[in-house]
Image (tube, rainbow, N blue to C red; front, side, top):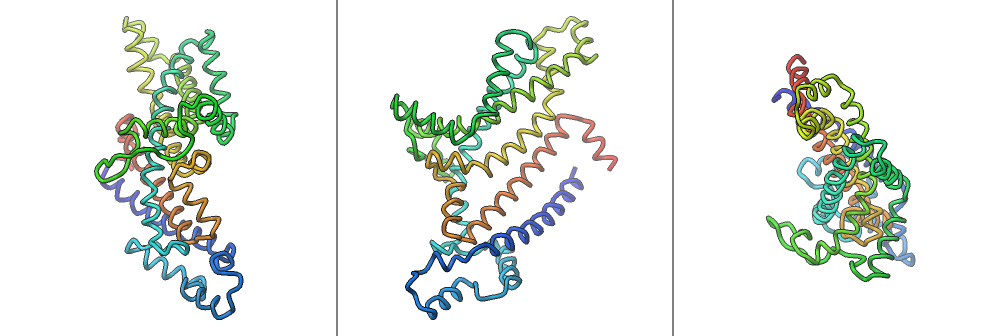
Length: 325
């Protein structure tokens, strides 16, 4: 396992290096932030001073070399708009996005797996068909439309929940979180539900398909023939064997929730990384955009590594294959 972790870490460094080059060149080749950041009435000397101050007067390869040198020490540059470290701005907003993504994924897991198991065990029942019909809606409805409908119903018409912001927060190990306060939960529940909808539908369909397939396997039939209770058959023999694809999807989708929470954060004015990215794109704040994308790539790499480790815990065959490799 140690050799495997070292190998994956080296691969991650190569991936980060390649992605930093692609992201940097892609972002810095688009538009001219000077046209947005300085007064249109400024003369040529003012423009040249601003360009030099932002380091945009250097060739692109030199800008990337300086960026890479700073990145090795954790410096991803300063925001063009706010003049503060871009990485600091990202990390400041990260807890809000992570909290939203974690709650959304928990909703998808806690509801999706039991509903998928039920639909898989009783596929022809009214409840099973209703669950599958609901999952189709989860795939089909646009996230921004669902968010607006939630706001209209629960905020405007009923007045039960606030429509924007993060609400009251409490410090947990020095990090502000909303789930420790009632007001925070009132602000959190609608955006988390909106973000969870697609993944809830995905969990239901994936769990149902795995359950239907597992119930036809010989080991399940043998377990039933031994007289094991239905709860033990489902909990031990069925659920354990369908967890591997589910864990894979959970890992990948959790990364996607973090990366693509932009729509939900914009609809509900949630102060996370996605909203910061939208604001940075509007002002062509290149350092913040690059820092955001690299942080997301790093999160994906870490999540995939965690998923692979969980593989070995769930399936001994994975450990055996790794040992042979």
